Length: 217
Image (cartoon, rainbow, N blue to C red; front, side):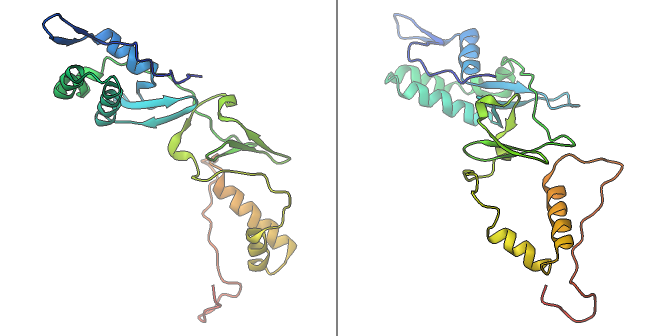
């Protein structure tokens, strides 16, 4: 697991001569960006790379502009306008050709299996199996997760299985136990990203009675 490095104001990826001439040091610049989670990433089956930012177990796409913003924000806190102005003006340092010096990261993404599914929330990951629901801290995950997979709200285990949504499922299933079970299985199938490519049915919901007259559905 890659831990995000703490920003250190003593890190200098440039030189400053006695005449006030500033020059970037590419190797230290590269290491500084990588220590703060910036890398290249090649998706499976592709030759072209994208820039990503890694924070603990979370990975997200980033851009040349966002990398430049990160560097300039860091330099702004140093309160040295000569250094800031140099990097703000050196657009070539933030072009794809130059940033290709970043290392390529090889990551293992967590995926659903036949018997296990994962959901990701702001405060934790949730591992779901037939017999249990397990809350997992992101730092304890044995792999990486795309940040855009995170559901934008925290998760807190419920003390009861009865809630508004379960009541809704029971009502649309006409309180029929067999139909309730079928609806739960259908929702689980849709939430589960693991799919057997040889058997992947479409889910279609109809009114209880099929006719030319609307049934309020």
